[in-house]
View 1 (tube, one colour):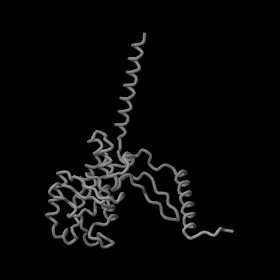
View 2 (tube, rainbow, N blue to C red):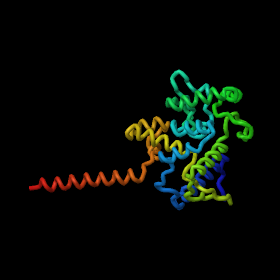
View 3 (cartoon, rainbow, N blue to C red):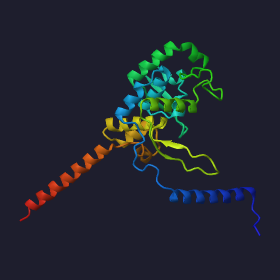
Length: 254
């Protein structure tokens, strides 16, 4: 016989059971990509932007690749959030639900000004959203581009650049059709931006974390990608130094 539990207690028990099952599934699930680099390399990002002819998407993906914006943050860039005097962008961070400011690089800022000047009427009609939605490009009726539509366009550009790579398929439950898992997604542009900033700042994780707008620097580490050749070179150099030090110590022994 079940004990007399309140609705909230039953809800808590069911939630606990769900979490236990979820952890058990994750522990038994095979690894998906391990050390696979899910960010763009320098060569890949150049090939990607080379095939983009639409200036709106070139600018939108530029905000992701240079400022590391999440797709939901990028589509909502509004002229009222841009401080034109200081080149600053006010970003409402999706994950932390806080407001941050970021400095827009000069080339990206110039592209933004040119795009706004060319599309001033459409942007104003969309309530100031820079990446305004045209007819049929927003299923929910928002004045800005819908995220899934942008993801669809992104996939088309990745395929055109011959960069599309499927590494596995999703493990689905409740009879849902498994999805193909692509190495490069719109979030890969954020990976690229954070990795590039980390390299430019000589691996300063604290600065990179501020740039990425992560509350925990350890989260930032999962975004910083190291190429295999860089890793192997570092290993070789480290062991060469170790051998040299060992040899020096032996030679100095009486």
